[in-house]
Length: 233
Image (cartoon, rainbow, N blue to C red; front, side, top):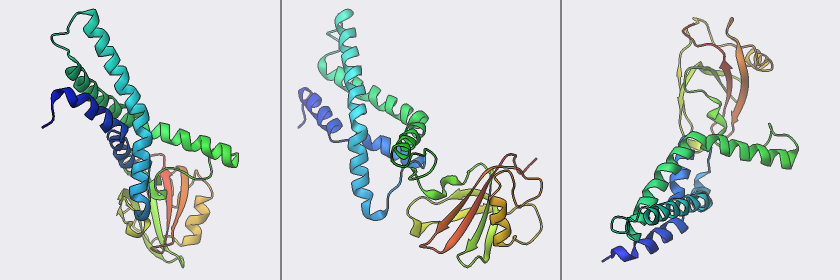
């Protein structure tokens, strides 16, 4: 049976093994800024968890040190023994890492990738990026999505609503049909529009940027336009 006096060793081992790092990884995965194929999933989670556990453990030590200072300053030895301090430090650490990862995690990861691209290619905007390629879809109905087969035959088009996570072999997307009652434009016309970031295939629909995603495993091409205005305007 685990005794209270052993809680410090348990918490330390838990943090050192990357226990809290998995929380960081899980949040980053939900924010679509980290990905891995099925074959490397376990290794990717393990490495990411261990890497994230380093700042997590530092935060834990800071809280533990602060609580010890509070105990000594206000003479709260009867309330804050070492076991209580360890437990409170762990709870506070979990709360802080959830907040930091949720609010700043995406910016931090994208900044790291920007620096890596800058160092390896000399360009910060091209090269390996975090997350899956199809995350260019905006889930707030602010993207127009055009799907074509690899031989450029129309499949479907509309406003991007949601997309599946996971690997390329399991990719799917939900589209809400556009209001315009017309056939899907030909592939070459949509591609020509994509060359101009301020232009979309639908008249009067200005865009901020465009992307062309090619899925070789499932055999489709997805052309994405980030529009400047909502479809209700």
